[in-house]
Image (cartoon, rainbow, N blue to C red):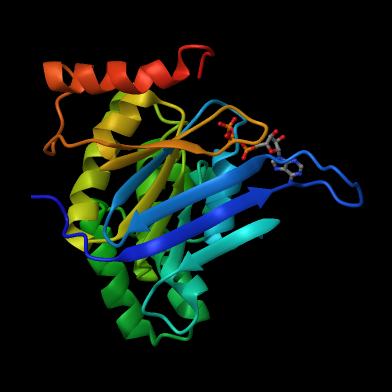
Length: 259
Ligand SMILES: Nc1ncnc2c1ncn2[C@@H]1O[C@H](COP(=O)(O)OP(=O)(O)OP(=O)(O)O)[C@@H](O)[C@H]1O
């Protein structure tokens, strides 16, 4: 069963972003971006390299501001920023190598002055959820790429964000580990009911994961050209005829350039 979708969690109206200042006619990376993501939805941002996917994700994360337009984030937190958790492509640069798996996962809780016993309990919950049982006392250097990405995900989840922002989180993993992590992410999303925004330039990954795919046009002036619904049940079979039909339909948006 798909997660229940009831209301909007993220809305962008007529958004634009330029990194240029002090000129009269700036070049916009993003222009006329309209986006609406429902609470509990798994939304994939798909587009060619350099079109502005990470820029858009960073705007939703609050790391960057829109130059033009409106961004609305709806979470139940007093500080909306607390409602958002960001998973980076590289776990190596996100994790602290001098802390164990458990310490990495509970780091944010320690910063929030959560008492040690409660920290341990929360860390254990997410160690279990992300399949890290038996690895709590290890250091990141002694883990595989997939395990490190699990730790990063567990650390983000331990802060209980309502919105999970993921920037090509499996891009650096080998093909088999990547497939395992994709399946794990779907399981975790279903168990936790988060809103997920997932960036990729891989059409197959987009169809495998997303309920909706925001297909971005080539930059500059990139926008969400189409919000494409993937009405396939999970887990999805990449060898099925239905999957292949979706693939062909999405691919038509990218026929003029390689993504
Ligand atoms: N801080 C910055 N200052 C200036 N230009 C930037 C900055 N960040 C991104 N850009 C430019 O914005 C455009 C979009 O970059 P972005 O990284 O968002 O694209 P992307 O779609 O995520 O690319 P990729 O798939 O290759 O990671 C690029 O032309 C990039 O050079």
